[in-house]
Image 1 (cartoon, rainbow, N blue to C red):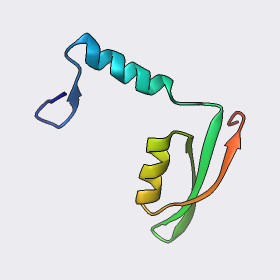
Image 2 (image 1 turned 135 degrees about the horizontal axis):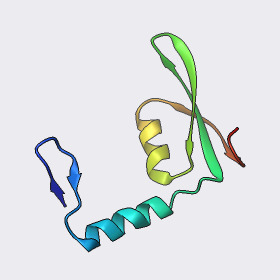
Image 3 (image 1 turned 90 degrees about the vertical axis):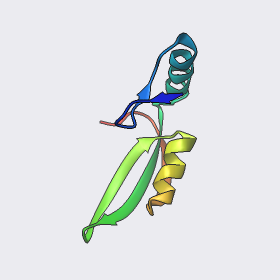
Image 4 (image 1 turned 30 degrees about the vertical axis):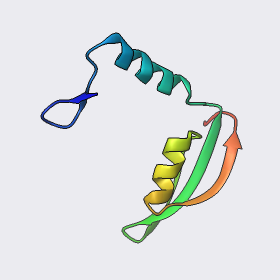
Length: 74
C-alpha cells in the first residue's frame, strides 16, 4: 500500500482497488450502532453503520455504545 505526501492512500493497481471495494461491500447499511458522547460540554448522539472497524474506532475515541438498531435512517 502506498501513501502520497499527504498521507492519503494511493490505489495503484487492481488488487488494492478490489480490496478497497470488498471492504466497502462489507458495510451493512441496514444495521446501525448508536453512540453517545460529550463534545465541548454538549451531549451528542452519533449513528454509524454497524461495521466492526467503525464501532471499535468510536469506542477508542471515548464514545459510549448505546444500542444497535436495524432499519433505515429517516
